[in-house]
Image (cartoon, rainbow, N blue to C red; front, side, top):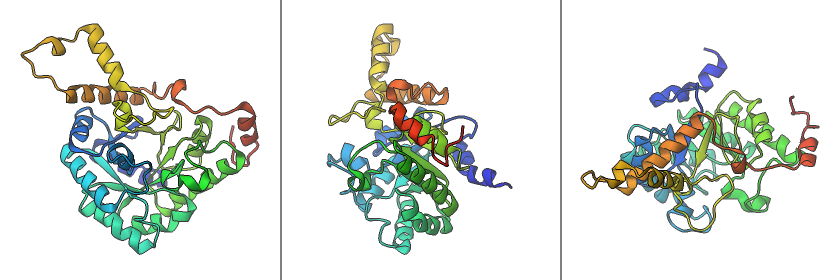
Length: 308
């Protein structure tokens, strides 16, 4: 079995297919997970973003292992057949390899997820290797990494200068070499994320990283318009689109009083539309992609890692 076949093996798990873009969404509770599975979403991330959209924290750092595991349990009940990725919160893997493995095992054993995700590149490579060697699938996370956002000036788009671009390439290669099964890129211009994809054989997934990669992630609360504090550029509100379409078409389901209709039906339709657009690669369109100035892109193209 060749290297690429081994690295892509997780995609064939629980019905995931390598041939099409992977649809990935966050969920933190039973009803949203239930709607996502009914909609046919490929994977669910129980993200530490739940600290912000569920608990109302200003950032993700207060999220604890206990909170994360509880959210995982609820999501598993709502989506028993879906591939789940548990997001290791700040403080759960930084101390040591052994500490990281212990907490990763808790995600699998108690949270009932299929994989874990952690943030960082070279600095967490030993953690990735240790967790992978323990028989646990590991997803990496590069670019805008919320847990360490303060160290690079806050929530800013990454990969827009040659130094940062080259660091992302090297970090991606290091994660793959350490045993990562996939990498999530966050808040990176499309041209850069597509270039990173050329340097690794494992799937490259994106949230605010443009198209031309192996899959897309969105926060469920952004898809459904449930988070009031801010809306990232890359977030598309599918809930509003579904409701508007139903009103314009005077949906029989809405008008038929004999047929029970709930908000979960709209959630499911919103997730179905998102799933469809990921699969046919109409999402993300240009309005949901971070731009890069021509001069910045030209500078990056002088990098030793740029391939035409």
